[in-house]
Length: 85
Image 1 (cartoon, helix red, strand yellow):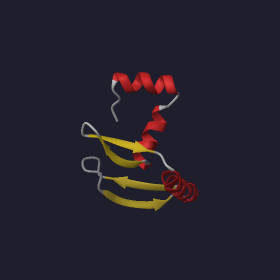
Image 2: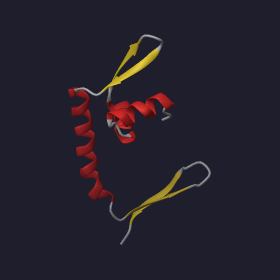
Image 3: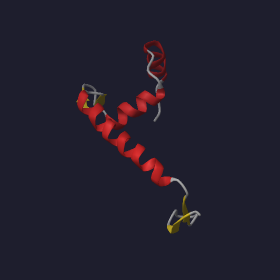
Image 4: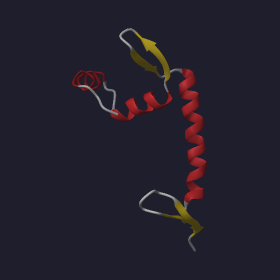
């Protein structure tokens, strides 16, 4: 994600963090606006979608504990995976 100087200034003025911008772009409702630009708007529907993802993430956190994945460093192919004891 790259922010223009204008966007950086406006985000600072309006108290919108870069983390918020990332979430709005990931989960916001997309629509075209004049000038061939795209608008991302965080709506109630966006919030519901994000809540589902976050709840699933929280459930997965405990399952990730003590897991190891071994990968090929050149192409990220997963070679094996296992539980640590």
